[in-house]
Length: 145
Image (cartoon, rainbow, N blue to C red; front, side, top):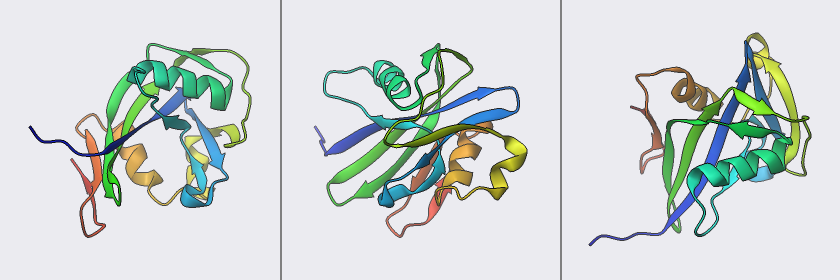
């Protein structure tokens, strides 16, 4: 049996019409506009973690999220895995958190924002049905599959 250390996280593209919900992250390790998300806790399902993180970071209660793909890369501790979900079924009042301000952004305005360095690749996996995976190889090169 093969085992490795894995850190599990989730991101969600919440959308309504031609707008997507973005978070202007404050943390220096991945700063800029991106999708809200966070870590999966021990003994927590991926969907439950996603729902909890969306409530904590956006104030919204999401329903029926769909798995859109995965992002992964190796780090010094093992593998870092981000499950990418998207959702258009939600309720509640938008509320920012200490992770960063959340705002609705028209897709036509995304290019004018200071996004995280791999936002374009993330958006491609969310948007393109033929893509399932976004990963960095050992040389730091980006691959979309």
